[in-house]
Picture 1 (cartoon, rainbow, N blue to C red):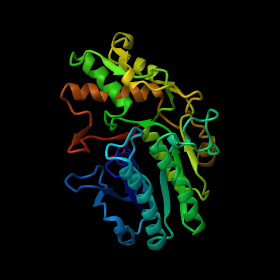
Picture 2 (picture 1 turned 90 degrees about the vertical axis):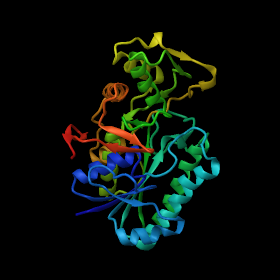
Picture 3 (picture 1 turned 60 degrees about the vertical axis):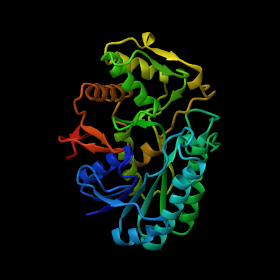
Length: 336
């Protein structure tokens, strides 16, 4: 039985990856900030150690695969300031890699990178050679993962970075524009909200389903190629399109309810942020299984259930997502 350790075990990607690895027969440990609630699907939880405690944790767990998904995942201004973002996204990664090299040098490590590290791209779609020219602190912190990975590869550690483009699910919190849109559509349809205030509706993103993206992570570690890979659908969609599909799912015309306001406005990139995942597909056979429309409709359906007071399959308790009874489905098959 393979053993996997996931940092960020209670986040969107951590929950879905943990379920997926369990479905493949892995023993999975999810690192979390608190132990009050169980993780889903039989994933064992373990408390995140103090800064210098990672080596002892890895020596005890002895994972075959390490998935480092923890960190500040919001591209806006960090709530707790720049120091905390750098600590979460850079220093934690450095400590984990050093601990892995010392305690479990035979393990394979996946790092969650981000397309935001590319900043305003020069061409579209973007592949692994796209210049990293971050225009935000979040993007800069993710760009630093690449020289860190190179340093530890030279020391003999197997490290790969998945350059993740935008990926969503029903587990996204409302501070992300995707859940802001789907939750608003559900509340407006129920008469609980009058309008939705957004910024530039013509900003383009490459939106995929998080369940598809977590399937790519173990595929990367099971390959002997030690190069970074873009994980993306290759299809750019605007915020306007997201609104259209979301409101149509509840029988509404978004034009009647969505209003743009200056405080949320940001200019669209001259070159759209869209990923070229050809190398990942050729290397591993990975393909996204979900369409953009099915992703948006699934998120709206979950929010309709929440607004109606029914469980959508997950519930948020004390900042953590908890799986309700019933199967979670990946690739159309029950995982547990």
